[in-house]
Image (cartoon, one colour):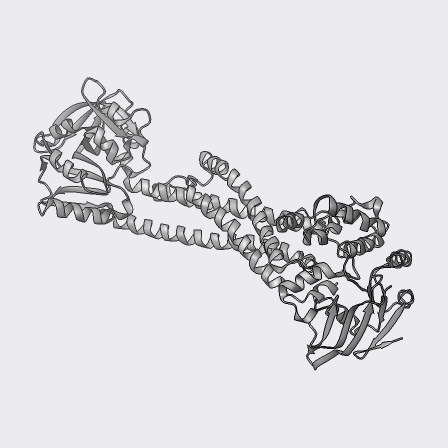
Length: 224
Length: 402
């Protein structure tokens, strides 16, 4: 980990409309993440931790506040620039692997590269490396249906990091896995030393593996 | 990239039997609706052509005669030439008709109308050749024989018990009934009432029977380019020939038949429109189903930074490919199906409704173009439109659900 700050979240507010009026989810969240830092954000279900993750990833707009990743303010990006930003700077892992069922494992991992205009041998090499890093080298040509849940999630991790994003965001990445698969996936995260990782989880064991831990409660983020 | 993605959506591999099922069902739905649409369009076109044929059949679209009913038209060659020069006039056939009775083997007497024609003109002005079993009219009326050649309607021949080559006698009733020897040169079967009451002979023979001078006829039969617009042609003919002549089109002569045809054509048009609508809706609904089935994957691609326009393109391609697949198969099989349904007379009409015993399936190039356009363009545009809707979805909602 270096001291260079990769992600800065400043005073971010976000609320959703609800039948009972406006529901405040984030009430002035501030956070700094350095290059290669591994951050866990914990909180009860519905506390807004996933919302924070998606706001950081440019998938949802905050009501106010700023998010700066790699020196660029996400809120100031146009629609096209935001797509480009997500394509190059962000990797997202969901609770479910969300691998595209029409593609095999390698093709899934190749997707972010192809979206970034990388193709041919160079793309295949990068995809191969990413799959090797998550321990899926023997499964490269397998169909998604032929993979276990743990393998699918590792495939999703490979897909999220293959294009070397500035920040890897993970939303309950072990939430749908059994204990043995969960351990394998956490070991994969441990091996990604240079990757800046923000994990949202309500699992203490997952959080325990991260150097920095925060708790989100009533819209306020507190360092633990 | 968009095309590759669209193809991957359609492949629907892996753990996605449901996706594959949707893709296959959609392609099948497009195929089925395209094929059905083609068959119905071909069937209605066939019915329309049959109706048009029956309008002319053995009758002409316009009949030209003298204003005084029993006056003859002399100098018909000159008049025929003037009529042929008019636009929309396809053919002109002068004729002489006479009410007569046939006598066969001295026993059976059948009342009929005999029509004397110049066969080379009559075959252009009417469809008589299509109804002759073994000859064409020119051959039948120029056949050498012992007496005047007569072409009998099939039911008239049957009533007389007359076979081809057999001698018959033509009786012209009057103050002094006259008898003319003839022989059956051919028979025709048009499926109309003419089969039991009409016979053809040469113009010269009919002039002799009727007592009309050479160079004169009773009337001229005119065929127009489109029987549905023969009324204005008749009006034009009347204008050209002047008050001494009367020109009446088939719709004036047979108003009930005209009304029936107009009604039928309206129903055919309505049926086609309804079918077209449901066919397109059917295909469009199936494409929508596939696209919504892939909503989660589309949302995922957007989160990965795929441009909304590229997602839109991919979804439009899904629509195009599904439409293309089903339509190509349907339009390839369609002509064969039409042929089989025509040959085997799958749609037969009991009692020869409107003188049509069955409906032939005759597809037109326009049908192919129309179906291909609708079944490919509509799903493509629909895909494009739906994808626009999808690209503005709350990605979080889609990806976190389930």
